[in-house]
Image 1 (cartoon, rainbow, N blue to C red):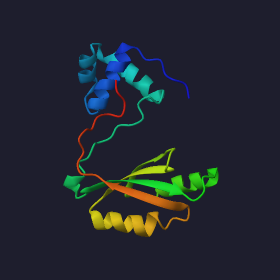
Image 2 (cartoon, rainbow, N blue to C red):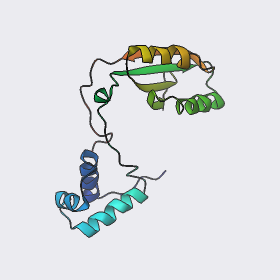
Image 3 (cartoon, helix red, strand yellow):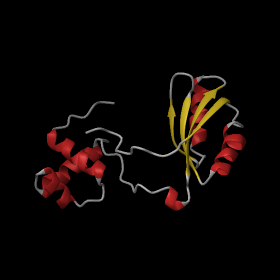
Image 4 (spheres, rainbow, N blue to C red):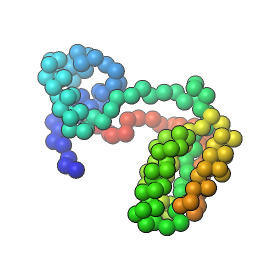
Length: 155
């Protein structure tokens, strides 16, 4: 994958959209200091290049009844390409797993989980995660509180 060439205006556009993806093109153009038509062309170019992947609402999980956030470090029995792919595919069917990364080190995967409560999370870990045929070890970490939340890329 090739790195996309971005100028200072593109970077300002990305910074503003990462902060607030709902603003209108007119508001965005005012914030970055260009007129609306070229701003829209730049945004579309960034979308087409895959720099902007999507727009979404950032929901408050606890207000929706999801009070538990945890991370699971998962070690597989065997790290063959087939097993890695099979486990990665299995995470797609687990709604409690919100994000998953293949990692190196003591574990093979890091799972970001969000659940209604501790019982629901424990049920998932015991009945689903550790029961997966590829899983050897699972270490869990319950969060206390989130202390920082920013966009994924520093711009």
